[in-house]
Length: 350
Image 1: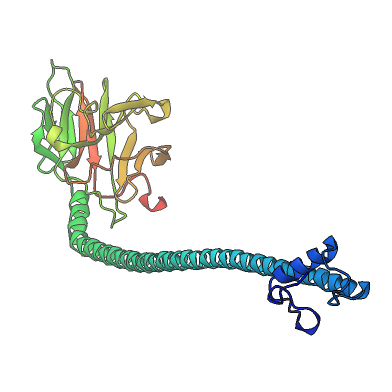
Image 2: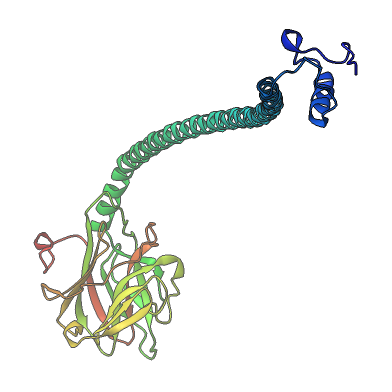
């Protein structure tokens, strides 16, 4: 039986790279016992063993190569996955960086806006401070101007006040402002009496010159009346001349400050109570006055000052219409007014 040399090479010509096709045939022949005893290609079992070992080794090498290829493929796959993860991580980092940049840009813009706002508020604060200082300066200028005007007014008023006080000291009962039932004795006299025999009723007379209330002078406009005779009732004090109705009671009219012979006190036309110590009759000398600065009312009786605390002339009465007056009620009533001095009460004691 002949064996084709094209199918299998033995000995040194055996090559593992021929995919094992020829080798497989030879092995099959050996195994199946198809070589006769005259074939010397394979002489003993040792060669067969070596051949099998080489074959097994070849299979192992093939498996190893296959495993190596699979490992390489797996490594490539892992590397690809790692690259994908790295790429994803890188994208996330880039996105975070972009977000951070945007946030930083927004923060910078916000910070810039806050700085601008702060600068504007600082400017407003400076302007308000300047305005406040300017307002203070303006207020000071206005106060200074007011003081100057008041001083000028005081200087202008001083002669007027001095003249008013001088005129008051030379005052007298005015026959032109006297009820017909009253009679003034003499020219520029200070004596008046109730002349109408069969007539009764309150009748009044005003003095010629008014008082002048002025904060720049501390003059006391004061006068006294001495009661020559009191038949029934009488009253005296200060009243606003424009309201001078010469018959009827003046004391109840607004702007009147008076004291009645029965001790009633009238302040701005309103009764403020009755005090027996304030009453007066024939032979008494009573006085009334007003301080031009404090507007405090002064009451005196027979040279002694009576309590008049809390009694003041209202601030609205500051013109020169505030005149002394006397009211008599019955025939025979008589008084003597004293405006000029030698008072029973010592004014210097005030």
